[in-house]
Figure (cartoon, rainbow, N blue to C red):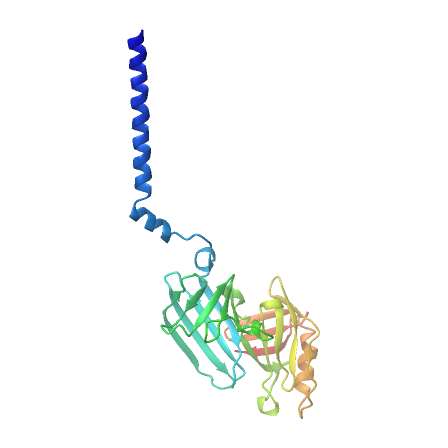
Length: 266
């Protein structure tokens, strides 16, 4: 009987020692330099690069020191290539294009479109924030103007500069105006801003199903110009708009009777 108990004890002891060795071996494998280095490379927190659906087309009109704005469009691709187009409004009809590879910063929060890291953008949820020359986010009253918004193809007419060409079928003579009559539709807060040919205009718009749209009462500065009729008719017509229609580079606004009352071009 004692011999049988001794044998059972020795068998259990052997099993315990074997399990201990296997456990030690597994721990050693987990702690090898190779595995430790792999763990260091794994991201520990979410960032713009790994958590956001950042590929797509972003556009907007950025502020310009010596023109009416810089109409900008940037497309980011999953293979880290990009295309960028810019047009300096009121200064040239030329469009400047560039393409190449972009890179992320180590934190996965910013992208750079050039080797010198001067063209920097912070990547947000469906937004690109244009950064200053030091790579910092622009703050203050104008900070919303330095945002490019990611837009689906059917909404890319927003964040675009539209020049007024006709009211109720009557062509506009740009030479008769103090400034070019135009509108820009901002995605942020659904704001619309522009000029009636004399004063700066601002208000809000509401998009509706089936290309429906409505405008708030427009606000304006109080300058007096020689030709105020275009601005007055533009303000009146905007209050009658119920629908929009896009065709190539033209934007038309219609009233409730489906009559074209305002016409714009890019």
